Length: 130
Image 1 (cartoon, rainbow, N blue to C red):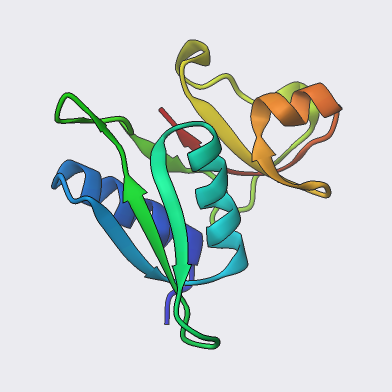
Image 2: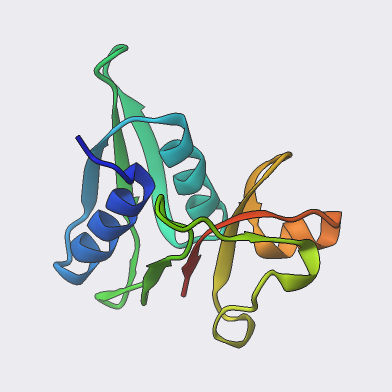
Protein backbone atom coordinates (compact mmCIF):
# COMPACT_ATOMS: atom_id res chain seq x y z
CA UNK A 1 0.00 0.00 0.00
CA UNK A 2 1.26 3.44 -0.96
CA UNK A 3 1.08 6.14 1.70
CA UNK A 4 1.36 9.00 -0.80
CA UNK A 5 -0.44 8.13 -4.06
CA UNK A 6 0.01 11.59 -5.63
CA UNK A 7 3.72 11.61 -4.78
CA UNK A 8 4.05 8.14 -6.26
CA UNK A 9 2.30 9.31 -9.44
CA UNK A 10 4.60 12.31 -9.78
CA UNK A 11 7.71 10.15 -9.27
CA UNK A 12 6.51 7.69 -11.92
CA UNK A 13 5.83 10.51 -14.40
CA UNK A 14 9.29 11.99 -13.79
CA UNK A 15 11.04 8.61 -14.12
CA UNK A 16 9.09 7.63 -17.23
CA UNK A 17 9.85 10.93 -18.95
CA UNK A 18 13.56 10.57 -18.20
CA UNK A 19 13.41 7.02 -19.63
CA UNK A 20 11.58 8.36 -22.74
CA UNK A 21 8.47 6.21 -22.16
CA UNK A 22 5.30 7.20 -23.97
CA UNK A 23 2.68 6.15 -21.39
CA UNK A 24 2.53 5.77 -17.60
CA UNK A 25 -0.14 3.38 -16.26
CA UNK A 26 -1.27 3.89 -12.66
CA UNK A 27 -4.14 2.75 -10.45
CA UNK A 28 -6.95 5.30 -10.70
CA UNK A 29 -8.01 7.78 -8.04
CA UNK A 30 -9.94 11.02 -8.44
CA UNK A 31 -7.12 13.11 -6.96
CA UNK A 32 -4.55 11.63 -9.37
CA UNK A 33 -6.93 12.18 -12.27
CA UNK A 34 -7.54 15.84 -11.41
CA UNK A 35 -3.81 16.52 -10.99
CA UNK A 36 -3.15 14.82 -14.34
CA UNK A 37 -5.92 16.88 -15.97
CA UNK A 38 -4.25 20.08 -14.71
CA UNK A 39 -1.00 18.86 -16.30
CA UNK A 40 -2.87 18.27 -19.58
CA UNK A 41 -4.50 21.70 -19.43
CA UNK A 42 -1.09 23.33 -18.87
CA UNK A 43 0.38 21.24 -21.74
CA UNK A 44 2.92 19.28 -19.68
CA UNK A 45 1.45 15.91 -20.69
CA UNK A 46 -0.34 14.95 -23.92
CA UNK A 47 -3.42 13.26 -22.46
CA UNK A 48 -5.09 11.27 -19.70
CA UNK A 49 -7.35 8.25 -20.24
CA UNK A 50 -9.24 6.22 -17.62
CA UNK A 51 -9.62 2.55 -18.58
CA UNK A 52 -11.19 -0.49 -16.98
CA UNK A 53 -14.20 -1.04 -14.78
CA UNK A 54 -14.59 -0.09 -11.14
CA UNK A 55 -12.96 -0.89 -8.78
CA UNK A 56 -9.97 -1.83 -10.97
CA UNK A 57 -9.68 1.29 -13.11
CA UNK A 58 -6.34 2.46 -14.47
CA UNK A 59 -5.09 5.90 -15.36
CA UNK A 60 -3.05 6.12 -18.58
CA UNK A 61 -0.97 9.32 -18.73
CA UNK A 62 0.48 10.01 -22.19
CA UNK A 63 3.76 11.91 -21.87
CA UNK A 64 4.75 14.75 -24.16
CA UNK A 65 8.10 15.37 -25.86
CA UNK A 66 9.43 18.16 -28.05
CA UNK A 67 12.39 17.20 -30.27
CA UNK A 68 12.99 14.04 -28.22
CA UNK A 69 13.26 16.15 -25.01
CA UNK A 70 10.66 15.72 -22.23
CA UNK A 71 8.41 18.74 -21.72
CA UNK A 72 8.53 18.09 -17.96
CA UNK A 73 11.93 19.23 -16.73
CA UNK A 74 11.19 18.43 -13.10
CA UNK A 75 8.46 17.75 -10.57
CA UNK A 76 8.73 18.37 -6.85
CA UNK A 77 6.19 17.17 -4.29
CA UNK A 78 5.72 19.97 -1.75
CA UNK A 79 2.94 18.89 0.62
CA UNK A 80 3.55 15.38 1.93
CA UNK A 81 1.53 13.19 4.31
CA UNK A 82 4.00 13.88 7.13
CA UNK A 83 4.10 17.65 6.57
CA UNK A 84 1.22 19.41 4.84
CA UNK A 85 1.85 22.83 3.26
CA UNK A 86 -1.09 25.21 3.23
CA UNK A 87 -0.72 28.63 1.62
CA UNK A 88 -2.98 31.62 1.23
CA UNK A 89 -3.35 33.28 -2.16
CA UNK A 90 -0.58 35.77 -1.42
CA UNK A 91 2.01 33.09 -0.62
CA UNK A 92 1.56 30.81 -3.65
CA UNK A 93 5.07 30.59 -5.11
CA UNK A 94 6.21 31.51 -8.60
CA UNK A 95 7.96 28.45 -10.03
CA UNK A 96 11.18 29.03 -12.01
CA UNK A 97 10.40 32.72 -12.46
CA UNK A 98 6.94 32.03 -13.86
CA UNK A 99 8.08 29.35 -16.33
CA UNK A 100 6.64 26.52 -14.21
CA UNK A 101 3.39 25.95 -12.34
CA UNK A 102 2.33 25.26 -8.78
CA UNK A 103 -0.61 22.88 -8.34
CA UNK A 104 -2.90 23.78 -5.43
CA UNK A 105 -5.81 21.84 -3.94
CA UNK A 106 -8.42 24.42 -2.96
CA UNK A 107 -11.99 24.37 -1.76
CA UNK A 108 -12.95 25.01 -5.39
CA UNK A 109 -10.97 22.04 -6.68
CA UNK A 110 -7.44 21.32 -7.89
CA UNK A 111 -5.99 24.15 -9.98
CA UNK A 112 -2.80 25.99 -10.83
CA UNK A 113 -1.37 28.58 -8.49
CA UNK A 114 -2.06 31.31 -11.04
CA UNK A 115 -5.78 30.45 -11.13
CA UNK A 116 -5.93 30.31 -7.33
CA UNK A 117 -4.29 33.75 -7.07
CA UNK A 118 -6.76 35.16 -9.58
CA UNK A 119 -9.70 33.74 -7.58
CA UNK A 120 -8.16 34.97 -4.32
CA UNK A 121 -8.14 31.58 -2.59
CA UNK A 122 -5.40 29.46 -1.06
CA UNK A 123 -5.14 25.79 -0.22
CA UNK A 124 -2.77 22.87 0.02
CA UNK A 125 0.31 23.30 -2.20
CA UNK A 126 0.55 19.83 -3.78
CA UNK A 127 3.53 20.16 -6.11
CA UNK A 128 5.54 22.31 -8.48
CA UNK A 129 6.22 21.44 -12.12
CA UNK A 130 8.70 23.02 -14.52
